[in-house]
Length: 332
Ligand code: NAD
Ligand code: UDP
Ligand code: UDP
Picture 1 (cartoon, rainbow, N blue to C red):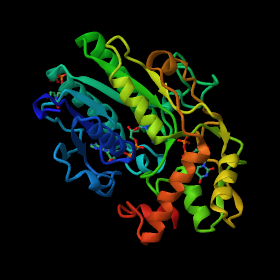
Picture 2 (picture 1 turned 120 degrees about the vertical axis):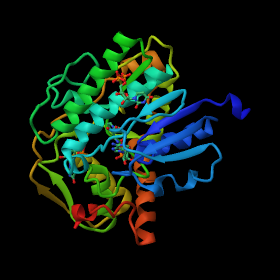
Picture 3 (picture 1 turned 45 degrees about the vertical axis):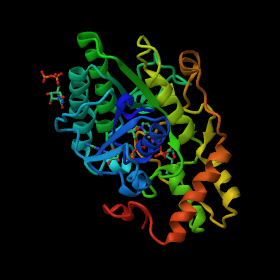
């Protein structure tokens, strides 16, 4: 494409797990990409392979501060996404979700640019409705340890819809359910990364509680496809739209599948359930199917095999991504 005709896309949190896959895919689709990240949980290693691309640019910037740039679309992904990370600095997490959203919405307003918000299934809290549909308002503790994230993301959605009503912004809100794949942070304490590393190292697999709580796991390539389809959808589609894999597995089933693929000698051990840990979570993706003609295609086992390959690579290199920032303590 003639570079003068290329659309420029801003990806906040572009050096993170999802952001790096999004930047990669957008470059493949012939967009010019500006990746903005403060490297709080992201890592240069995630985007190092893109640095030589002529239409890829990285800006070290914290979105809690204003940003002036000229772009056509904004994907707002910046935010620590795992409890271990956001609890390290809960106030900064709320600032990122709320001040960050205001700044990115202000930027979109000035530019008349389309803006997509990476919201989360956490807006449903510990849900009383199962599976979760977008019209369910959620069951969220406003003062707990997860609240900085859950309430911050809820407030960001409020801001998106107020900018839509008040300033006629073109908004797109997706609610992402648990997503996994290569470039997940190895020490983010998430169930997929914990279990894979434990299995590969023949260490005990830590089941929190009795392991009967359920989650749905979406492979990263499926999620990115849904995200881009949402951004490209007609103006009237604002969301919120759930994006996730409706296949529901207990945490114990996940552990057993990982043990099987890795042929690990690890044993299962039980540890206390963290506070506010949702008992069941599964997306209803009817809206995504109807409005975006999207549904996940990668089965859990196949996605796990690719993710395990990635973690094996990290282990064989002898150094794990992002082990800096003191996150190694999580897995000591
Ligand atoms: P991640 O931690 O790998 O990526 C987040 C990125 O944002 C990191 O690169 C981090 O350095 C950057 N960042 C954080 N605060 C920032 C700030 N103030 N300014 C600029 N950059 C900042 O997490 P991820 O899993 O890639 O998640 C990306 C987005 O998707 C997040 O908004 C998260 O809430 C959302 N999400 C992810 C999942 C999932 O399963 N991965 C589920 C639901 C929602
Ligand atoms: N903003 C920004 N880049 C821009 C325009 C605005 O970062 O190109 C920020 C700025 O900090 C502002 C916020 O977005 O405070 C919200 O902008 P808006 O225009 O909605 O409100 P106001 O400028 O009146 O505060
Ligand atoms: N979990 C677990 N062992 C671990 C890490 C997590 O049993 O080593 C459980 C956790 O209690 C939760 C589920 O796995 O019920 C998913 O946890 P994760 O932090 O990955 O995601 P979230 O709770 O945000 O859905």
